[in-house]
Amino acid sequence: MPRSVVTGGAGFLGSHLCERLLAENHKVVAVDNFLTGSRDNLAAFKKHPNFTFVRQDVTEEMRIPGKVDFVLHFASAASPVDYAKFGIQTLKANALGSHKTLGVAKAKRARYLLASTSEVYGDPEVNPQPETYWGHVDPVGPRSVYDEGKRFAEAMAMAYHHQHGIDVRIARIFNTYGPRMRLGDGRAIPNFVGQALRGEPLTVYGDGSQTRSFCYVDDLVEGVWRLLTADAVEGPVNLGNPDERSLNELAEVVQKIAGRHVGIVHKPLPPEDPKVRCPDIRKARTVFGWEPKVSLEDGLRRTIDSFREQIARKGT
Ligand code: NAD
Ligand code: UDP
Image 1: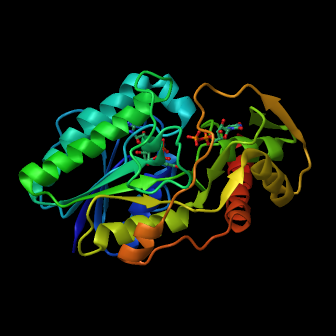
Image 2: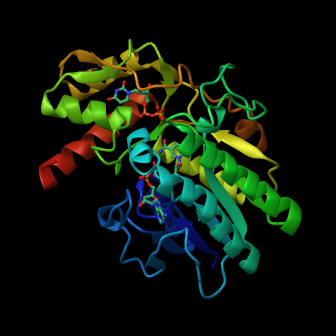
């Protein structure tokens, strides 16, 4: 039975990934310090006989007894609000945390998968972004703790590949959403859904003409699984949904699917907010036959249902 270590396992993506790996008959060790994740995210599978949880900061020495076949490094704040608040922790999770987890992969001769991001492209001057685009990043700007942390992590993963022969896979993940996001994490979809369900107007930053491309979590997890298990993959691979929408359009769709016409209010655009973002997914299509299947409307329906349940259960 393959054994996988998932850092950030109590987070949004990490917990879905643990669940998928368990369903694929992996033994799973999740590592998390609950900086932005929670025990609730583990509830669906924490009693599974093949699941163990280690409460640990990934920036510290990591000792995982026994064999390990795969290391998936997902620990890092990911919402712009979270990483602005936890700037140093974000840089450390991506720099020191990548070093420590690559060390585990080297010691165990395990395959390594890094959760990188579309943010490595910064405020892109090319749209859609192919993996060959080098990006347009302000190294001292408000998003630099995240962008540069991930760029360092990618460089570190490649150095372990070249110097130590580690089989590394780099997923450049574009905006992903779904159940288990924190309603208050500050990202566009949980904000909009929470506001619509509370009957408040949606807060659109700037004039709302900026674009993003939103991928439903099940599609993303399928992409990560294929990237992890494909025979050989050279270099980073974009994983995201190429259905590009403006934030104004997103606000319309959320209201339609939630069945609440609450309107919008414009708020100031955060500095250096990327104007466009859309993945070129030709590489994922060609190398391992992946593309997203869930439409924005269907994904939002599932997400809104789960947030409704969460609000009924916890009142938040
Ligand atoms: P999340 O905040 O829900 O999950 C991050 C998890 O990492 C949390 O459980 C947090 O407690 C944990 N963590 C943070 N620092 C840690 C540390 N030092 N030690 C141990 N655990 C730590 O965010 P998410 O959306 O699930 O993102 C997960 C990963 O995917 C991140 O690496 C993020 O950069 C990447 N990613 C996500 C998206 C997206 O749209 N969701 C897009 C691009 C990249
Ligand atoms: N945004 C918005 N209203 C909100 C939250 C976010 O208009 O309540 C915008 C934000 O300015 C950005 C886009 O939505 O242009 C996506 O933001 P998010 O925080 O989800 O992630 P990003 O893609 O910026 O990392």
